[in-house]
Length: 110
Image (cartoon, rainbow, N blue to C red; front, top):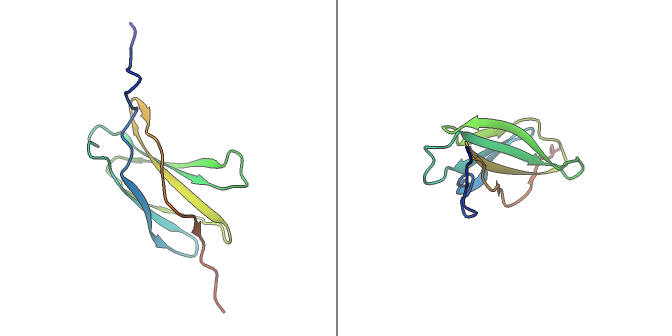
């Protein structure tokens, strides 16, 4: 038995936007809008970018398709962080959607 897919078929529709909605000293909360047709999704994959790690994009967590918000723990002080969210279906992962700006941990005052 053989399966054939059109070159135009996409593994999964991407999320519509990703943003950080809360930023604490040691965590950041991400929120995203699901794709228009998301009832066939298995879930979401969140990755973190850290420029001095190899590979720089590290998978953090896989979440069910009903979750559209996640608090990333253990933000490292004085380090820029970027995140991206991908949808997942039985065909694979969508193209990633990144937040637009790096997230910097708040520095203590005083």
